[in-house]
Length: 191
Image (cartoon, helix red, strand yellow):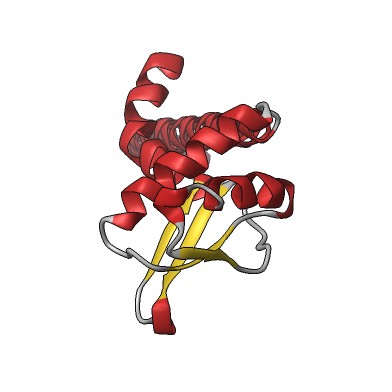
């Protein structure tokens, strides 16, 4: 029995040591696991922060792109409206009565006479008869009527020998007015 008691004591001592080693191992495992959980939580937090920042940046970029697209569409629409107004104005001027075009040709020719006292005038086909009537007046005897040209109205004047030409077409005047007043018109119409 003495041997059995020694064996039992050794077993008990071995069991206690094994339990102590297991307990120590469990503490180490728990500590390592707690540290790992802390690292995971930190990494997870960093990843969430990074993804939130990335999402905010992407949303901001998308909003900026959308705003730019809307602004571009508004500007294109405004330009189309202004172009429509320009074309509408050209059409309305073309439909004015013959008396308007006669007076316009007389005034334009009087102005041109200061630079080109003699030469050939050209007008559109609609105004040929009107231009002939104006050229029949004594003050414009230095001018002859040339071929009809494709202009909205007004006249083109060529000096003798074609050394000097003046464009007094309606489109030229409208373009000057349009360019100088476009910003003001745009501000009035579109704020």
